[in-house]
Amino acid sequence: MGKRYEIDPLTNYTVDENGCWIYQGRKDAYGYGQVWWRDRDWRAHRAFYTHHKGEIPNGLFACHTCDNPPCVNPDHIFLGTNNDNIQDCVSKGRQNSSRGIRQHSAKLNPAKVVEARRRHAAGETTASLARAFGIVESAMYKIIRRITWKTAEQDLAASSATASDKEGA
Ligand SMILES: [Zn+2]
Image 1 (cartoon, rainbow, N blue to C red):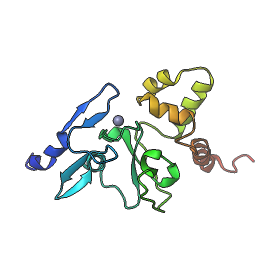
Image 2: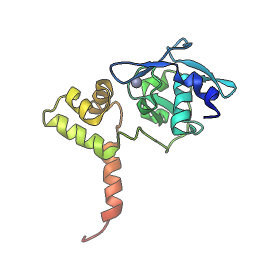
Image 3: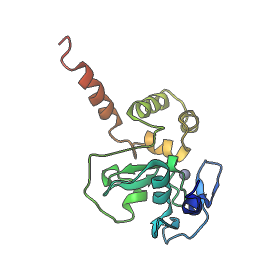
């Protein structure tokens, strides 16, 4: 890879037991990694996300599903607005009014979230569900408690309603 030198700062992490990539370089006052990349300073998790998944649209927050500020695992980061009310993001005070665009980790979607809540209601533990869905337990806890994915049921209903709307009414 000819541009190898450019991504080297983005290999400076260790992996913990939750699958979090713990950034090993500089950290800011909030515990977020800081990295010099593409000729400027980045919050490390934003740089890793951008490098692995693509540019972060203006106005969106890069939020952790794992609630672990030094984590730079792109699969633990999703883009959200402040409507998602993720403390991780809101606590920065970078209020922004962009809304309507949400790109969560590919591991989750409204159907999966609804399924997880249904299985939890049926007695399955948060830890077991976290393993089944490939996310950390703290993230599953937030889903079950509706701290995240508050509108999953409506989102799912809306997407299936468009397909069957008015049919056979
Ligand atoms: Zn993580």
